[in-house]
Length: 585
Image (tube, rainbow, N blue to C red):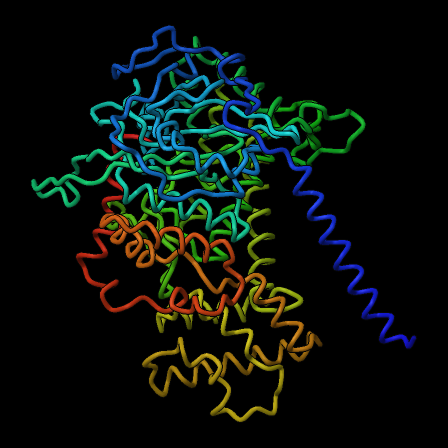
């Protein structure tokens, strides 16, 4: 037998073994019915709760949560979409989605066996101003599930009815915002960005009255409930609310921090004094501070770094959250609360999908890194007020935020361009060109992998691979792009990476598909007419954002002209923002 035949046989054997192992793994994977989920209600068990259990809006003092039950009215609820991969996280058998009572359970109309429902109390800074108590105004946690790997997952119904934190809202959600949250949660996960997840989306069969344009013409819209899943929904505001209430509640900040570290940062809880974890302050007399002597200092440093890493990844894919209030900042470094989000179409650093943010554009794409740091500063102030960290430790956490963001962002942009090392001048010039010519962010980077590392290419052919996104550019701008591509090719040649290898690497970090707003709106329009198929198709496409997916090319197209109409622009953002932002999360 010659060597080539041996290689082929070995490859076949290897593939066969892999398939056997995959099959075995599938058979061994725990698949539970809903009634058999492994519940462990640590949040309720270990933290102070509200003695009252009614949903009357009020200030909830000295408590981290209020026990409440879902109360949304339903009439023949229907399952619209679901995520098999999230079910796997919970050890839930995907066949459970087929149960006739599944929509009843996940609309909140029927209790989930073993669950213990509550709404969380938190506050937050909104648009830079302290807003006081906010809390879960339409989100009700069903409890925490421990899976077979020892991972803790919190299940939460969003749109399940009133809580003490609903203020003057109804605690309900409409199908529009629910589709957006469901799809974006799963799309972000597939892009490799830390995020809360979504198990399922259920319509309630009832209508919810909303004045979408705030013009005095309310209309009835289909109601819906999303089951969100995360290791925890704790936010910066979960700690801030207690620090804001003075001395009596400062102990709760410590209690909640201890809980968080114990369950979600156990490596910090178990830090050894032998480990080297220290930093220089640059000050005489206290030149070195040992983080291992203060677990809270080590914790805030990690929170800062996770937050910086998250926002760097947002910048890499052109994601704009839209409402980065401190109550929307996850202490675990997750993307949380999908309201007026948007992915960049035409590159515009000042882009904000939030119509209420248009005057100052506080939360625009370019500002997100700075806002992340501002929010970290508010969080360090909370921990300082509770005497958990000192000024030096707080300053170091903010310093680490900046360093981590730049390291992560530079690494991401370097990989997006297929380079071996960061080239600040080249990347800055590129982003400037993209902003001037309003180049589609996602499609540009995907097409960029078609550029060849060949200095002999004639000038008039240099930008041919990019022609699909370099639309309506004049002679001067064409020359600017040719100049940039020349410099880029020089970098590619210097790297020595083969074109084929580089293309594969670039396409693994530059998505072919993102959840553009117009795609969401098309799925919403169909669903509101009773066709849920487009929601499920869009989910499947977004589960493989880096693959070409033959036959799905339409989902990678530039937005159509109607997506830029003023009415659509308002519709796609305001309705997802104003209601959620003013009333609840």
